Structure formats: structure tokens, C-alpha cells
Image (cartoon, rainbow, N blue to C red; front, side, top):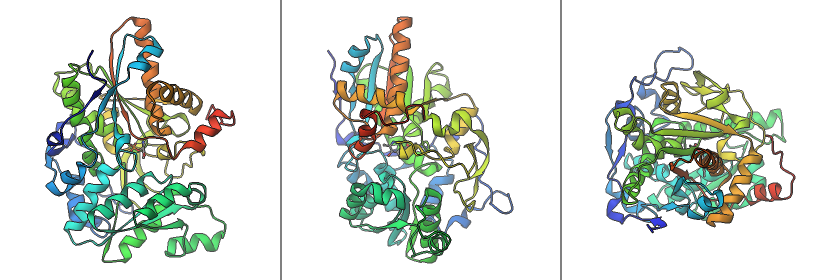
Amino acid sequence: MTDTKITLPESEIPTHFYNIQPDMPTPLPPPLHPATREPINPDMLAPIFPMGVIEHEITQERMIEIPDEVRDIYRLYRPSPVFRARALEEALDTPARIYYKSEHVSPVGSHKLNTALMQAYLNKKEGVKRLSTETGAGQWGSALACACKLMGLECMVYMVKVSFNQKPYRRVMMKTYGADVVASPSNLTEAGRKALTEDPDCSGSLGLAISEAVEDAVKRDDTRYALGSVLNHVLLHQTIIGQEAIKQMEIAGEYPDIIIGCHGGGSNFGGLAFPFLRDKISGTRKNLRAIAVEPRSCASLTAGRREYDFGDVAGNTPLMMMHTLGHKFIPPPVHSGGLRYHGSAPLVSHLLAAGLVEAEAYPQGEVFASAVKFAQCEGTIPAPESAHAIHSVIVHALKAREAGEKKVILFNLSGHGHFDLAAYESYLAGSMDLQA
Ligand SMILES: *Cc1c(COP(=O)(O)O)cnc(C)c1O
């Protein structure tokens, strides 16, 4: 019997990030200026991001070196193990072999710390003293708060007011890491004051919190803004996940037939899948399938259109070519906060249009049934976001059973669900809208 848990020594932490752009069959359409609709000049992003981040956003180099300062902090939790989900296989009575990469083992409980640390480093290197950001459910805010403290930066988090009140523990976590956390809309910014004048009881939105965080960064010389998903540089940083997984699957003597990740903005899916997709694009693994899984209530890849759209609700960001439900789309309040985004990563959208990746969408009732099954077999309670991937894994493992095929399935367990127990409670109590 091979190991249940496939680990790598710290010396195997990747030395480079993998950039899929030079390997794509056609180049990514450029981002456009919101007013002129001309391709933007990278310098225009300088008040918001440091040059190091902008370079990672636009680079066409295939391998980007990871500085030792960042690799040293990755040692706290990387390489993350790959697990063989034997009990789940048995419960499903499937000939499929199921493996998962465990990003939930990071100190903040998700993959988001991978890019937060790299972004904090790039800012610090250019003399930035403070980072501002927004957070909805609080996962990104927690990751950036932790990364800033470990790198010696200050952190300012605008947390959507409804979450600020409903999710006190994520807020406490950010404060424990020394971050300043305010409910958005706040009276610290013009965008926030305007929203509060119009409606003193405004409960906030991710789009509004983005406007506040960007305004904070633009107004202060010592501050830049940081984003936790969607953009090329974020997906680039997450490719350490897939590079480790390639080595771990080799140790298991396997190569996946199907790779699965949940999809909100695209970063944990891209992070796991892109290093493997290199083999599909080169033709050595033509039949490899990579599947991005989204909530049916916010299905940008499966129900959206691929067109130029804004990243925020106000329409202030550059226009990006992506699968989108429209920047004014307000998703229903499903329990997977991290997947409630109207758009998708331009890189994932481009690969979907090229037929190199696939997408699926499921209602939350099915997703939570699979989450509970996974917890009862494997012990770990998954984040509701990650449970979308788990549900798709179960669907494909059952198909493999019907077909009598020994498929190898690898998925990304992007986070644990310890801060999402209210969602589990609603599912277990039967009060969840299962069709949403
Ligand atoms: C934020 C988050 C996601 C969704 O973001 P992606 O960029 O699509 O990965 C998924 N899972 C967890 C645990 C998250 O925190």
C-alpha cells in the first residue's frame, strides 16, 4: 500500500513560479483603459501596485524566480501534503483513485497566503510601508494581515459591513495579526462617506470595499493596494501548488486524468492546474482534463459571456477580457463567500475559450451534501468553496464506477471550513436554500 500522505522536504519548495502565458496557443487580450478603451500602459497602475507586482502581471517569461526571503516563510507550511482519499474512494465504491492537494494546512487556512506573502515582499522591497485591501468573507483579509505582519508591513482591511457584523472571528483573526479592520462603508474615505450619506444603514458590498481600499492606497504615498485573486500575478504566485503536486504525484507513481479546482476568481484552480496544463499544451498529455467548478448562483464561466468588463461594481478598474455575468451582477447570498464574484480570471477565461479547460456549476445543496460526505470520510471539514471541487470529484468518481474506469483524479482542497460552521449549521438544520 502506498502512503496516504505524500510529503516533500522543504528543499523541494519550488524555486520559481510558472507563467503559463508563453505556452498559451494565442496571447491574452490586453486590459483596456476604462475611458479610452485603449490598451493600458503599465505605468498607469503605479499609484496602486508596486512595479514588482506590475512586472509579474505582464511578464512573458516562463519561469519567475521566488526570492529566498519568501521561500523561507513558505517553510512554515510548504510543501503542503497531497493526500490519497482512500476512505472516500471506498464510500463511493469507485475504481477511481482520488488525491487532494491540501492548501488548508496554511496558518490562515487557505491557499491565499501563497500570493499574500509574495505581494507583501514585492511591496516592501520598493519601500511601501502599508497595504490596503478589501475582504468579504474575510479569507483574503486574514491572509494579507498575516503576510504583512510576517514581512513587517502595516495592513488596512476594509471589510464588507454585513460580514464585519456576521463573521466576528475572521475580524478577530485579522486584528490578532495586528491589522486595522474597519467596516465598509467607512467614514475614512470619500467613497465610504458618499455611500453613508446616501444610506446610513448601507450594509456594504465587495465592489464598494474595493473602491475604499483603492482610494486609501492612491491617497497615501506609503500605501499600495493588494488583490487576492483574478489577476495574472495572483495566479502566477499560486503555481507553486501545482509544481509541488507534479512531484508528489510522481512519488505516488501516478499522473492525473482529471484535475479539479473550485473557481471564484480562478487562483486556486489555476495554481494547481497550470503546471500540469503545460503537458497538455505541449501534447505529451493530450487527454488531461482540467475542470473549474463554480456555484450555480454565480456561474461566470458556464453562464456568463466572454467580453471586456470591469473588475469592480463602480466601473473604475481597467476593462479585462473575461467570462463575466456583468459588473453590476449582485450574486444571491450563498454560503461560499469566496466564490461570489461576477467575473473570472482572464487567464482561465482564455484557456476555457481555447478548449484547454472545462467548467461545471452546481447548486449549494449538492455541494454541501458532498462536503459532509468528505468530512465524514476524510476528517477535514472543507471550506464551502472547496466543497464545489469535492462535489465534482464525486460526480466524476461515480461516472468512473459506471464505466469501470480507473481514473486518477486530483483536486485542490483550497481551504478548511472552521470559520464557516454557520453555513454547515444551516445545511444540517435544513434551512439552506438547496437549489441556489
Ligand atoms: C478565496 C477562496 C476561493 C476562491 O478564490 P479563487 O481565486 O478562485 O481560488 C476558494 N477557496 C478558498 C478556501 C478561498 O479562500
